[in-house]
Length: 240
Image (cartoon, rainbow, N blue to C red; front, top):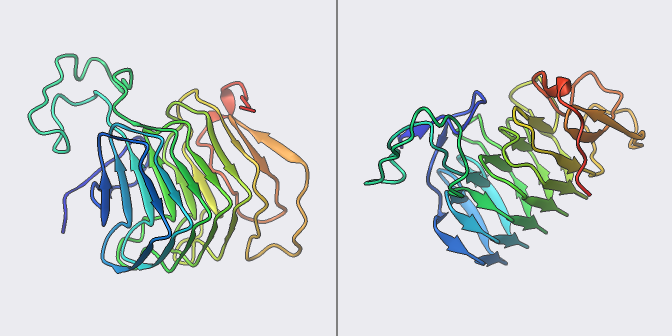
């Protein structure tokens, strides 16, 4: 078993590795690739990264997440992912992302992911923690044990989820729907995708309902697409 850690304020634990591992990169593209029958994560975007694009790639039969994006903050003085670095202002700084050691401007588009989380059940097709300004647009995600898309926190904001088809999720759990969001900071995101829930009686969408900081299409189902964890007390924000 690889070492796991808590990526941020959610109840997830992640291993900071993948078949492709990015840290300290800019303007890298993964295109037309196939990730199949891997024991762990497909792509790990770790720490400082800017303008990474993952496009037109397939993910199937993975032990963990298809794509994970996980930055660093300064709540601990040392971190196994950054050997030799000692942060003088930890832990008094708290969740301090001002040093920029986190992914920004990541784009995931045109990908297909299915049959993931074969070993790690707390997994998604795309999960981000301590990440900002990501775009997840025009993908097809299905057949996973947990949420299809997971935002483990609201770090930074400025994210966009649009025109994705996400279905047959939470097959091994049942407390929420296709997306799961722990937006516990004051960033804002916009989510505009047409989604099909496996228990939805029809495929129509009602007007957008604002929940906390996220705009989500309201479905007449017994599950919530986004669990906002009390963030409704913050003023709604919508990024155009």
